[in-house]
Length: 550
Ligand SMILES: Cc1ncc(COP(=O)(O)O)c(C=O)c1O
Image (cartoon, rainbow, N blue to C red; front, top):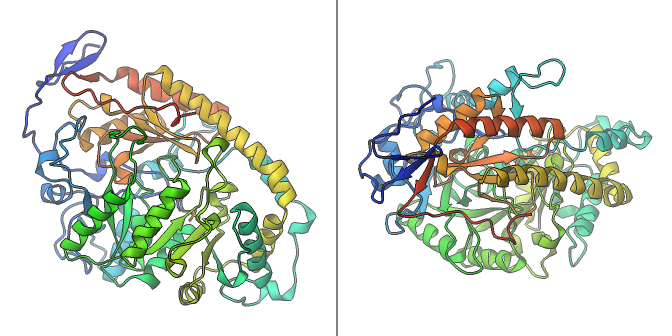
């Protein structure tokens, strides 16, 4: 089929669109609508940030998820609307933003309180893709034309190992205390095991202490609890973008806490620089900008290993970021939920708990869960490690609503104490399988000539599909995402991660070979139908440096 070039493109052979040296300015502003479904799988539809604060805007603005052009302005600035970001004009790029998750809020659920309406709105506007997937899940035998999910960050590679371990006799134990109300921080026997586990697997310089541990049902709850106990309503937590987008919801729903974005760019500016690299300078500039808008920032969220970049921070970078936080008296929430999913050993990943000295231990709070590293996102087990007893106690108080069954606490203690199984059976096999799956998908991407960022941690590859967007807008990104979904493969698009540059997608590779194979085949089919843009004036190819990819 012959595809007509858009007016501002010149058509060249081999299905490429050639961008003229000077793209036309002032392309019409596009609204991001939920219909475009820029959805992440474990997250929600992230809408354009604006500067409104809780309480809710009173005027309904159409369907959940629709955004006005005014909202887009406040988020990205006029200059970026509809423009290609291949070569961002650094002067025009805003380095920070303050999110308002309910700026486009609309709800007619009059039976609900304003909080209830927000809560429902999040549900309604989130995850078109995820919901579509659950109605039409791929199954080799029962539904071979169903949707392949390369969008949800789950490790589906090791169920055989896990189920064998979880079925062993030591897992089933019942005694009265396990059926009674527990210490809300978690049973002491479990917190002792968690402390030993962290000491060993985080290589802490001194033994971790059970009194600094709180256990609860996953990192999502912990984000919610920490935001609530550390911030007043309307205050903000700084976070580098792109980031695991559901945190917006986690910190907002109970705590009414917002995120302040530190926008990172793909462009590599220095010799040893990486795409989307965080620096203290960027943190400083963003903090200044957010403060200048009158928004109080209470803390910094760091995800290490990073989701969606699959990148890690070096110990030196960690020290610098922690030092920045200390200078500004910010709390640091360290999300290390992927800490044992670093399958490229040469990366030399270090947990923050391994550092010889924390600049501000009273304001450093570490989270981890079994959701990712043990492929048990449905089991709901997470932990907080903090030396700050006020924070530990305040979070523990909320654990009355986020607590774990005594029987699960017993199981988790058994699992975490079994260092032999973890170190000799589970982790080596899990890493080998992750690595093989990663190799397969990255080779597919290379064969397609698609640049990507990935360093050997986590379950995902951050893929640069900007050349498939003619004008480089989020609207086009959403349309491309929809084409993938229509072709029965679910991916997560960059908007979901509050990525500043339209055209990035996250591809999850931690799945079985047959599903990966079919998923990538469907991705390829969509891209083959898609014309490509060659940016003659400013070819800004995201590099895949040799140290970056494996
Ligand atoms: C970086 C990050 N933190 C936290 C979570 C949520 O973890 P949990 O399932 O333990 O609530 C996720 C899930 O995708 C994640 O990617």
